[in-house]
Amino acid sequence: MRDREFSESLLAWYDAHARVMPWRVGPADRRSGVRPDPYRVWLSEVMLQQTTVPAVREYFVRFTARWPTVSDLAAAADEDIMGEWAGLGYYARARNLAKCARLVTVEHGGQFPDSRQELQALPGIGPYTASAIAAIAFDRPETVVDGNVERVMARVFLVRTALPKAKRNLADLAQRLTPRHRPGDYAQAVMDLGATVCTPRIPACGVCPWMSSCAARKAGLQAELPRKLPKVAKPTRRGIAYVGRRTDGAWLLERRPDTGLLGGMLGWPCSDWTDSPAPAPPVKADWRDPGVQVRHTFTHFHLHLSLRVAELPTDVRPDVGGFVHPADFRPSDLPTVMRKAYDLVARPDN
Ligand code: SF4
Image (cartoon, rainbow, N blue to C red; front, side):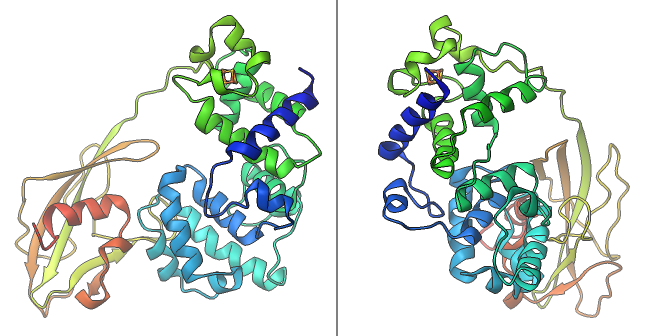
């Protein structure tokens, strides 16, 4: 199959099988002239960084109902954005989201720029996201390469070199196939193919539009590719989280510094997260060990978080954090690791 035939057969497949997503303008609507809203494309692509489609759907719908335009989001308070983002992880994305929305509103008159280079100059938009927005929102012939696309390329072209060494080669192959005609639909089509047909373990080659040309299928190696170097085991860190509640019902919480892990998010005051953390109660009190532990995995380490709980008098003055009245406290505003602690020791139905 020639390069052009690859894109044409994939686009024909996409016309019939495109996944329906709340941020997507499907192929039939595109044909009838509907244009994607760059704000929705940008928001979805930022949410999808490191996160799966099913996890993002609900967040996307909530964000766009609350902030239908980039200017609405730009006018939102940081705490509200961080609160809506809670649970989605990688919180630097939410901080950059707010910065980017304000910059687009103030410096670009509320219009996203339409080239990869200009998009990449905005906060929180790296090369992948810039290419995805340029292709999907503006139909620029940019190549979008994520794990799905790498897998498909490694199989179609029988690339036996292991990842990450094969990355450059796989990106070049993906670029070779990117068409000038309907590049936005093509970018979404190749991602859909990787997510629904050319899946990691058991690819459904029988329904694949590239079946007749796929070298890995011919060699019977489709399930073995792409090869990957063995992952380094993640270390385990430990920590202590202090779940304190005043007798009037207010919770003792702290907003974490803007930079670093869970930056800008609300959480329970904690010790350091190290091999052997020193106790660091936020206030002197009768901290009790409930005998349960939160386990959570971040990108680079596992965390075992011991919990301490205490009831605090109304006149207490904490060294860190502040009290949040029950009426202003939404457990859903907590990042997942902090939410797990709440669920274990503080949720009313415990
Ligand atoms: S034929 Fe099979 S292995 Fe090859 S691209 Fe299609 S689904 Fe993937």
